Length: 402
Image (cartoon, rainbow, N blue to C red):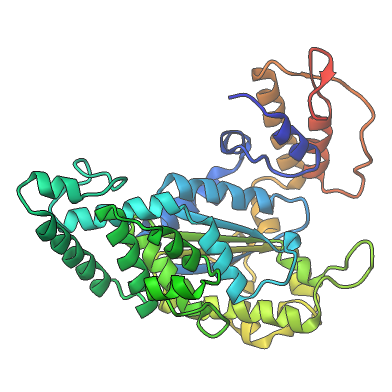
């Protein structure tokens, strides 16, 4: 493994690296919480059809984003489709329509399509090792003695059986029928392009609607139904499920550093909280869906703009605040401060993380050159140590983080 300059830049800024291998190698304290999340939730509860929403709360620079990225990596290794959203990076306030669009855009279309085609292949009697789902199955049926017309009819019957048993919305049934008929038979006529355009919530032209019969349009009223159908579709394609990670929830309580105005109006904040309230309430209905939301303590302490300002959501979350002497791995509201305290405290954790980073740097034949670095006095001990070390990385006497 080699450390890329892009990842060094992120480390200099106190952010986790993008490279999953480096992220995994830098991660400490697996047995404190991460192994539990993987074993209890990703490998068992969610994989068995469960659904869960968890809130991670911890100070700035204490590793919340790193934690989310690590869980995202673990989920992808276990066959989940994942979506990562940072509220701080959103150009406009997040609502249910935008949430659906971001989920749809993040889903791997090729993986989804191939998985659905394989599902039809199983209906037709072909195992995964005989049919990969990445090409039309029509020629195979014809080679086995069916006429073209008979083969097409068998394919369409199999697609109908899948959609009938899938519990998708009527519009998604049409989508999957069009997409699979196109992918399995091979006569696309750009139908697959129209289907994916509709799937992403984009507006279809009249002729596209007419040819595909996809007349339903994404809006605030039906967006939750679309989201539920998307999750079912992901699982139907033989993926393990969908993992949604939302970072920087505290952006709702923050001011813009330039204008000093709040990033969100109170009404916008309530809309976001209502969205999360819907996700919490839907856990009894949704399947194969894991949601992790992270934010700073301000989301608890700020009574005007934090979670307490939206009682409908707060009532559902406050049971997670029951005090305990030790970190509770099962709590729906995860206390990052208590977690780090149980592994030795932030100073020890920061030192151990920095020692690990230095080991990785040495293994990559990089050097550390002491120099003046930006002032980090206001940063957390963890961010201070990692940023200072990353800023000193050199190769052959030259900086590699510029």
